[in-house]
Amino acid sequence: MSEERRKKNGAGKSLDTLLKGRLALSIALTGLIFIAEVVGGYLTNSLALMSDAAHVFMDVLALSLSLFAIYISGLPPTEKRTYGLHRAEVFVSFINSFTLFLVTLFIFYKAYTRVLDPQPVAGLGMLGVAVVGLVVNLSVAFWLGHFAKSDLNIKSAFLHVIGDAAASVGVIIASVIIYYTEWYIIDPLISFAIVGIIFFGVFKILKESSHILLEGVPKDIELNDVVREINATGGVKSVHSLHVWSICHNVYALSAHVDIEPTARWRMGEIFNEINERLAESYHIFYTTLQAECLGCEKDEILGKVAHRDRNHLH
Image: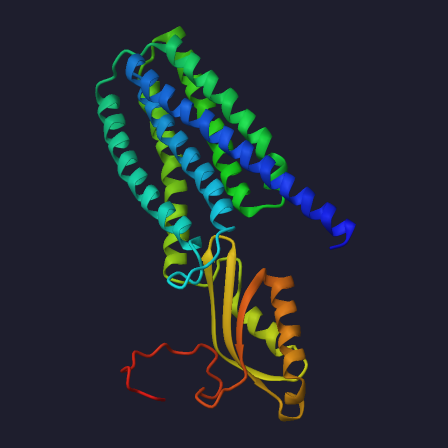
């Protein structure tokens, strides 16, 4: 290994270690804020703080999944799980988001009853907890901002933290209004707003994770563009039985039957290499399975049907 490559690998490892450390610290601090807001919401009788606590839980989940994804990406595949445990990240995301959806339904119900029957809230205590939460969220956002520019995984967690900082600002505004005016109905009204933010985030995560679990085409990939990219490769006649899916949130895979011109079959390996380079550069697809045999393909059938066949069926 050259000295230059050794330095690059060393820098990559140090950045990876730094990121893991910042994520772990962010999870710990955000977890403490979650506990503080649950306790503070109970003691101050603030539904807005309890709602924000649910939102903070989304941050803890997002940060934990980001750290989890970094660790599992380094685990080797096994004979039972040839893709490793990457899909576990998506499954955990789906389960936790669905659970949070049920929690927010309960908060929405409590906010509705509070609007009908406003209750006294300790505005000063509510303010103190919200300010601490805002400071922690801004600190976490500052720590992760650099990594969020180049890592989609971290960017997702970063956006969660920014959203919670905005929710904390709403709670602070509500606490100041309550402290000076005793207009207690602002507490459930802010709760409605926070619940709306949570619903939007939960719906997005549920939609994305279920799409991945059902092996849908990644949302940032247009299948027809992929077809044109493959067909634009010199020597390619057509493409059939094309499948594109996500292994996890930012790891894409593709399989296809590529019909190669008879006069170009002698350089099949070179053609496949060019296709792989095009897919990696344009669509972030690094895991491909390309097959040149197309005897079983229907003419002009780009999407291959997955047929349920008996184990003894040879064709």
